[in-house]
Length: 336
Image (cartoon, rainbow, N blue to C red; front, side, top):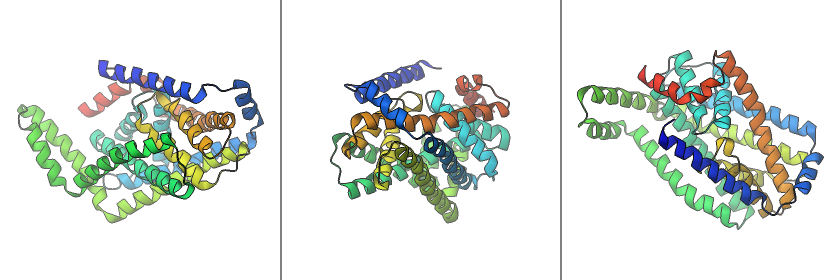
């Protein structure tokens, strides 16, 4: 891990600690634990199972993104999605993305640069869905909350600018070619050739966004998968006796995932709990109950997929050390 990466990791841990302090300051731990004890365990198990329904559709979305590069079977992609979740949950710097792209290259022959472009595209579509959830929910619920408004006011322009640039480059590949040509012109011959080869991989990866059927399928399954994912939050709310309407559930999901733009420790520890509590207390839920809910729903979406991700990683012939060596795997994949 480079010095800059170590600094980012340390900053993420500090940020998580700050948000944990904000989420738990002044709370009575006994009251939080009492609410957790009252949760319906059967519904929590049902929520854990339901999570994997959304994983299926996330893999289906990934299949559409890859169609212009190489067809990959859905069972293979479901495994890689689980491994990606596991990597992001236990290791900093979005290592899960690198692990699954590396495995996509090793198992399916998809060039690493193209796989990374697809991974970035997924995050763009995720951001689009989260932004939709937040804006629709806020318009229906009329919640006035400074923390939520800050997510919208800061996250929205950053995301929209990135999304506009992404689709501009996808629709007008020659613009990217000209930019790359300007950047690589001063480079020595060998480096210039490598940069040109990588840039063509990127351009080929963007081809799917110029095909209406692939783009429509990607958008459709993005919304379907995240709406189903929101069902996990709703089922856990039922386990706690919380009668949350679906707009509030969408607001919770949108807030915690758009807040993922904030660099934090693996699994969004602290940041996740803080924004769940912010949303629920804004709609009248007691703070201790909201905190108990935040802790449990985070565990439900973190623990099962992390355990299954480790098992699937082992079935790929890799051990937990592969997670800690993810950056080396990235360099190896790019070099090859």
